[in-house]
Each structure stands twice: as structure tokens, then as C-alpha cells.
Length: 296
Image: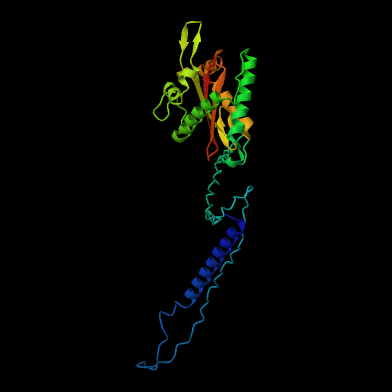
């Protein structure tokens, strides 16, 4: 307890004791008469007695000495002060949950497939600019040059009547193939052998091999091919374009050489005449029929 508090308490007790003693003295002075003051009613007048002097004892009231001794502890007791600290719990601030920004999935932008530009793509040329006879002679020239390179004789007399007959037969078959839209050995219901007979070339073109073996016209006497002129078309090496008769003739000849059977027919040493039938359609298609003959 704090010494100041102790001193106050002691002083208060002393005051209470002094007050109590003073009260006791006052009560002692007024208590000897036996009660209240007498009245004159009903009392006989007697002569008053002579008062006797009575010595009143002096009452000595000791005055208490108030000594406030404050005993101080060498080690003051710590006053336990109850400090009420109102700790206000902070209202938790609602921290917004930040949704992670989704990493955008990298969408592979489709690489547009480049449309292949055909090699040698050219603007189509109208068919009236091309000549079938010019293409025919271009083919004859290529064929004869090839035969010479192979050590074989060239085909002669292209303007003779036999060759003219062969040409008519060859053109007739090329027209039929153009109408059918396919390369074939039969046309108008006729085989190669039958066509030679129909155009009166059968007897003219047969020949004797090794002195006693007669070779008559049949499928071995003919080769066929088709290509385009003045327009783009797909070949074995991609898009191709034959810009003129010479280019178309070369393309036709290469087509024939791609067929081993046809190439062997070109190598027949006995053949010395040839009919070349060329047809160019309105859609820039070129159809070719080559018929062989041997004149003794």
C-alpha cells in the first residue's frame, strides 16, 4: 500500500478517537441531575435550603498526541495498477482475392498455306492462233532428228499420195479420240488393222521381214499421245505450258518416249513412211495419231 494512503488513514483514526473522547466528556457533565428541569406545579413552598458549596472535581482530559508514523518499506511495493487497455482488434480488411490473370494461351496462328504458283503459269492463248499443219511438220522434224540420232533412216516424201492417205487415217482417229476424251487404239468401232483396211492402206503398208516373213499392219503400226497448247496443265514435273506448236510437238514426242512399247515402234527399221494426224480442240487440247508404213 502507498505510504501516503497509510498516513491519511492514521489521521482519520485519530480524529475519530478525539471526537469520541470529547463526546464522552459532554455526556458526563449533563448526566448528574437525574433527568429534566422541575416545574412549580404542585410544589409546597418551603424555604429554600442554603446551598452547600460542593467542590466539583476537575476532570483532566488528556490530550492525545497524534503521531503519524509513516513506515516506509525499503522496497516500495509496486502498486498494482490495473490498466485496462482496450485493445481494439482491427477489423480485418477483406483483401480482395486477386484472381491470377490467366496467361493467354498462345494460339498458333495458322500459317496460311501459300497457294503454289504454278511454274510457268501463263495466260491461255486462243486456239485460232495455232495451226495443226505447223504442229504436224514440227513433230515430223523432231521424229526424224531422233531417228537419225538412233542410226535409223528418216521418214520421207511427206507430200506423196501414200503419206496423204496415211494422214487422213491418222487425223480421223485423232478426231475420234478428241470426241471420246481418251487416248485409245480403237475408234468408230475399228481396230488399227481394220482402219488400215478401211482407208486402203493395208496392202500398201505391209512388208516382208527376213525374206519370208510378212508383217501386216496391226497395233504395232501406230502410236498415240495428247497434250495441251497455249494453256497451263499438270505434267510430271508440275505445271507446264506449251506456248507454240514447236513446244507442243516436243511435249507429244516426249509423251511417246515415256511408253517403252511406243518407243520400240519408232525404232522399227523397216518403217519409211509415216502419217501424222494432229487435232487441236477449242479447249487447247492436242490429240496426235502416228501411223507407220513401209514402201518397198
